[in-house]
Amino acid sequence: DGGITQSPKYLFRKEGQNVTLSCEQNLNHDAMYWYRQDPGQGLRLIYYSQIVNDFQKGDIAEGYSVSREKKESFPLTVTSAQKNPTAFYLCASSMDRVRTEAFFGQGTRLTVV
Amino acid sequence: SQQGEEDPQALSIQEGENATMNCSYKTSINNLQWYRQNSGRGLVHLILIRSNEREKHSGRLRVTLDTSKKSSSLLITASRAADTASYFCAPRMNSGYSTLTFGKGTMLLVSP
Image 1: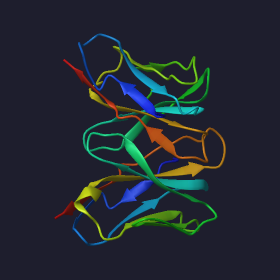
Image 2: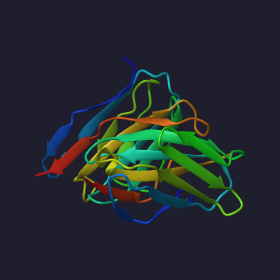
Image 3: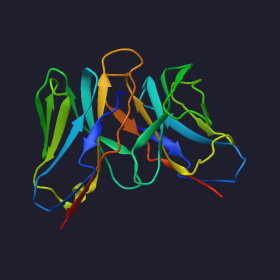
Image 4: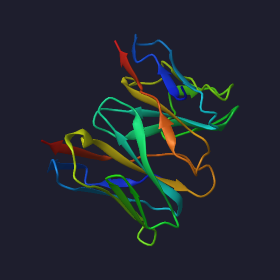
């Protein structure tokens, strides 16, 4: 059953702690993306990766870090430097960077307590 | 900026009516994609229209593209309550580090 999986669905974090969100895909896609969505807002791009061992900052990369050591996996770490991390985080993948559609995970809702 | 801008921001209609939403963008594109997001869920791809196409259909969806005006429209015919969602467009550039960016979307409410 091919797809893109985000975990966990809900995550609670204490202020000052780093937390890592998981994103795994078995679609053999080269490109992967991370977005942040705040209530009633659109998606803002945090980081994207076009290929293994390469990634680029998006519009709001400050306070976040990523790695792309395997094609299937693109974890996002929300660091303590992110001032307002409470949000809905979405991961996506696409076969290439331009010509094909993207597939999205179901999201992780992160709450700082 | 690569992202598209959807208009209107919100649209409220009755079941059975048609819904039209628009997307404007600023750069030349390879294709333009439309997505739907139900509340609290991930986005779902609806339709992709290439820069050399002017119109495309998929079920009750009709998408048009006018590259001279850098605009696209999504028409949903005979709307249903289940069409209630946010709709986003994503123009895809031809070259460079083209990525996938979105605007704020159009929130569609279809009332029974």
